[in-house]
Length: 161
Image (tube, rainbow, N blue to C red; front, side):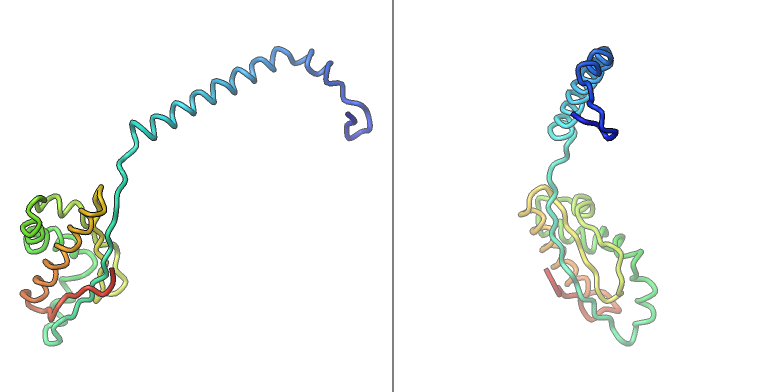
C-alpha cells in the first residue's frame, strides 16, 4: 500500500513494532464494550422507569366580566397548579374515581406554563393510558364544577383533547 509520499507502507514492520500496544488497545476495547453492555442492561432493566402515558386537555376559561380584575390577580400561571391540587379539584376528582386519593390525583396532574390566562393545558400522567384518561376525565368534570361554583368564573370547558 502506498502512503501519501508515494512510499510503500510496511504493515509487517508496523505490527512488530506495536505488538505490545496493540494487545492493550484490543483489551481496552473489549473491556469498554463489556462495561457499556452491562450499563445498558442495568439502565433498561433495573434502573429503567416504567413508561408514563399522558392525557392532555386544553381548557377554555370564561371569566365573569364584572369581576375580571380580581380574578385575574389570583388565578394566574403560578396558582393554577395549587388550585388543581386542592380539595375543590383533585379532591372532587378522587371522589368521583374512588380508587385514587386526592394526593395521587395531585401528583398525576400538572399545568405547564401558560401564555394566555384564558387557556390552560392540564396533563394527567399514569403508567396505563386508561388511568391517565380516567384521571383527566374526572379532573375535567371537577374543573367544570369549579368554574360553575366559584365566583368570578362563567365556566371552564374543554377546548381540545
